Image 1 (cartoon, helix red, strand yellow):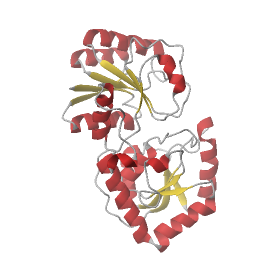
Image 2 (cartoon, helix red, strand yellow):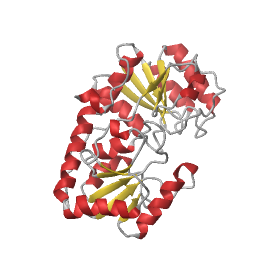
Image 3 (spheres, rainbow, N blue to C red):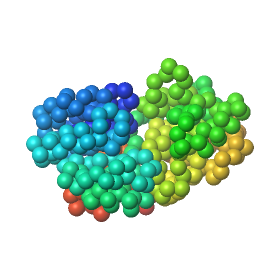
Image 4 (cartoon, rainbow, N blue to C red):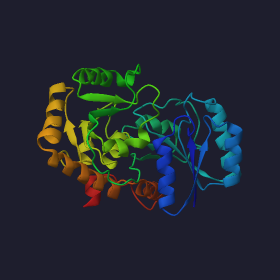
Length: 319
């Protein structure tokens, strides 16, 4: 089987795209990454026509980044006609209304892979909607070194986006305590693929998404950080208890309360580090065994092919 992962590779490499390629290879399939955002449509067209993938996993199809939406749609329609590829569009943000609901895509997209379970509006695309949560990249458990950081936040901060205003305010309050360091710093590249290394030199990671009230929108953060062997102190998300166990795989806090988070850090990192280390190890093992992209890729194709009812992701799926 041939898998193409199409999206933005060059200037901001996507965790989703890396997961697609890694999971395909782990299943014994062929995989290729194609950039149709920064790499140019003609180069993407040439690569896809030559490769003739069975499945194309794409994102940023309806994004204003790079070529115009209609030009990307035109490219993929031509590829589909030439190769017969099945095309999956991944929508990984918390948007509950499609960016371009007026676009007719039932002649192009074979399924929409969505990262939350409030997707009624996406029925306008006229194609199957599959809940496909992010997964965990393969990595070893990091050997703990002396902590260079007490607590880290890795991600967009500060942010002008409507999505991150509440998060920005809380992180600013945490930074003032001198207990939290934010990365990346100016001039530093994206930290997405160095989480494993950072986990070895940080006491804990503060994980906060932009939206917490959208059912099962876990984003990539829990899978990324817990799966990298980090001690994750996680703002509660709607439905997260169905996937991760508090005080076993990570540590959950309910409110934007600085004192609550500092007390959790002091308890699990300073006063009882052995408990924090146990959570790190159990969370890493759980993600690596149950949420790797090898399983995510196999499951989503089996769902599309009618061999499974849904992708596995619940705690009850692994009993």
